[in-house]
Image 1 (tube, one colour):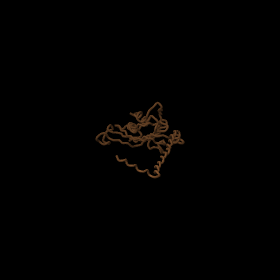
Image 2: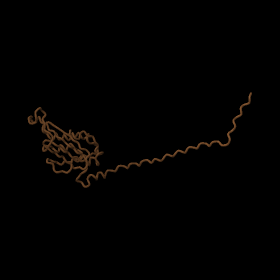
Image 3: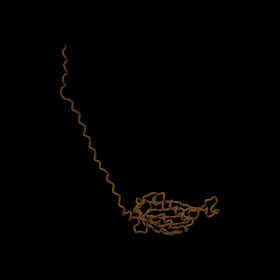
Length: 211
């Protein structure tokens, strides 16, 4: 299900804008790109997908879904600018890169700007039966693809990229000052003991008269 990520990867709301952006159609050998087309990385997810036969597109789509469908994140909490600023880069490895339908791959990512889809030779072609791949007919073949999906923000080609969104974000509120503790009043000094009596001691009492 190519759109399973609609409710698993991104939190949807009425404010979400669906942006149909055509990806950069890279073909091996990949042009000398210096970046993935973003300045800040929020997530990097890996996935693999397989199918019976030699359909590299189906395996690539399943690899992309495998990379993202188990994540549950709120984009607006990890990317300044939320969905409008989100940028994605997809790197795929399949046995036959030239046969991959990049439009089908792009359909896996309905939100944000899909900057690049780079496809290179890799993955795996295997047999689903007891014999080796060279010994089995085409209907016994399996195609395996792997995907690396990078989610982030910031256009490296824009002037001041990476700082405009950060400057637009409100600064965190200052921490409250620590409470001022007033010193405890000192206890009063103890009272001095009463002075001893002065003068002669009183005479002892007289014994009672005999009866």
